[in-house]
Length: 206
Image (cartoon, rainbow, N blue to C red; front, top):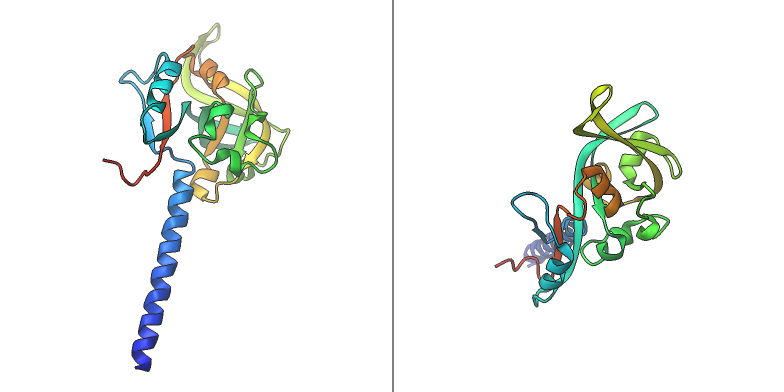
């Protein structure tokens, strides 16, 4: 009886730990990765405001926000690292992700259009050796034609704050900028890359 009791106790403990770990992992992953991405075959979405309103009318959809993602390299203090730079609308991003809650000091609306400010993951900022107020340079692989010939696209940003999602994969690779600044760098005009959606039950996909 004592052996059975110890076995059941160990089983209950392991199941509880695994369930808690799964829940925590799921919440952290889905706090950064959207439940649904809506985009077009061309990779650019026109009239996203109207499409966002249409998608919000779907019963299961609780939030929708536009995004533009740019893959590039961030450099500062003679250090450089690859990064996924995501252009977001600070007013809408909180409806599809937990980034506003992950900010360390300031609200997400510290990102202003035309200000070319950037919010770095904590590990990303540490690898570059930068703090709030420092400058970082974003190098995009998209080539622009200049009087000196073909040159990669460069832009300097000011570090406004850091975020911590609690997962190294995100904190070391993701940076946030304002959607309009990302559109200028991507030269997409009024178009965005797509819409990110949040739904009631992400595990009930069908």
